[in-house]
Image (cartoon, rainbow, N blue to C red; front, top):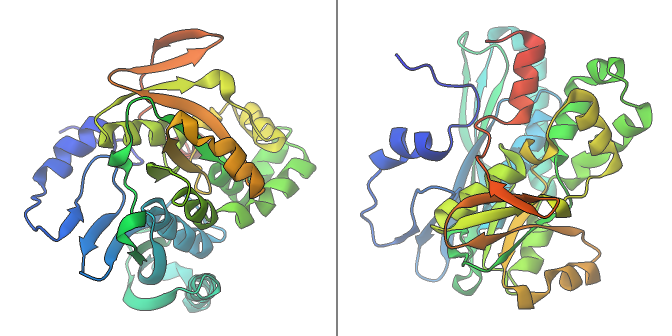
Length: 336
């Protein structure tokens, strides 16, 4: 028996184990399940329905807030405006009724603040889980002219991310493992700054700008970090990529946390960052600067191959199979 690694199933294993088992046969499904595609798109005539599901398993504090934003970010990457969510809660018996109620209130209040309605779902108490598992299915509408897909990128396109690297991962580390970080020498100021990252987790604002300014493809930077997002977009577009590490710039607090924990920030989960592909002449830096939103060039798409450039030298690159957050959690909990 081949044991599966903890974390997101990605790359060839995802294709072989899961995606190759799915049939795409309906003509009204415009974007079916596929590598690098986090949302399905269904043609309903007057508008497009966009659907995406995501779980929260690696976070504890503010897990409800994270769950809503992560699921709706997938819709934003497809060029859709979220309007509803369904919620599946798998809760351990020892969680208690009060904590379960607080979790649901957090989900509802987060969604309502985004003008998104909770449409129902399923709640189950099970001793098969030790911590709450939250799965959100998000529904959104898209105009046909503004639909984007990870598969729409082209060779020669420049790759950018919004806001920066390691946003969600740094936030989870600072929230759930604060004492460990302090013991490792992370400053209280950095922890305080990262605690405010909770306000950076939505990519809906950059989606609205991007789809009106020539961005061909978008992909939210979740598990696997920037490395994973680039590889998934390239796979969806059947292209290769060059990661431009010389362009990487880190927020000081992310640099401190990752440095103290020996974590690669480019392989750290980063909901709140959007990967965008656009032609060089689009000059996205100027467009986003006018809107007071930070973006950073991180690579480019090519016809074939996977490479990384550092200090002007290009070498072949293999995307790490596991997110840095999972590596950290396994290490400090002594999981195999």
